[in-house]
Length: 218
Image (cartoon, rainbow, N blue to C red; front, side):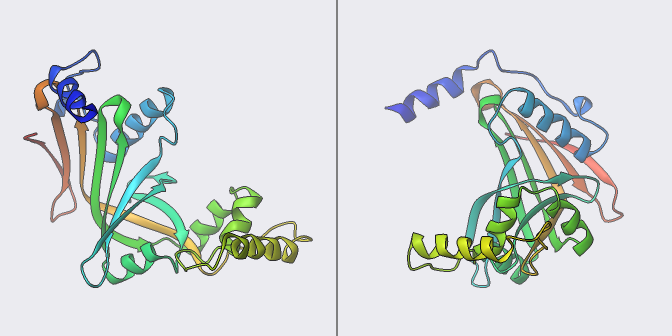
């Protein structure tokens, strides 16, 4: 079976195996994340900034979906979405989330977990201005996570919005759209190794807001 074969390959080790220790990490988690993101980009991975966002609703039901990381700095990581979407409702009811960057072909993952908050309107506007016009129109047209009667209804909504802004040089930011900042308490860098003896190195935020680095057992 394919799954059995995958298990055998994972246990045998391969040319991709690269030892990774705490001394190999950058001084800060965000510098290290940028370095690994650069590696993923240069390796030609599709959507290297794609990450799996996990949230929990008021009833404790978990959800996960893929979103795109749009900025990384000392505060945390930022992605953008509809503020009326299911993910945004989850984030408002439980201000904690986790994200995972899954770079499978590099045998690497990065996991972040922490608190969330909306970014400023100014930060949202600056990013919005870089988006293609079609993406801006789509953000206006789609009532994200709402049940639609048909694909035609969605296409009709886009057509109406396109007509509405046909003469506009610049499309304004919708009030229902903006960015979320994930401010991590832990950032774990996972490097695959043979025989399941993977390298797991984590930056942990302390009570005084400094950071410590630990090795975790695989």
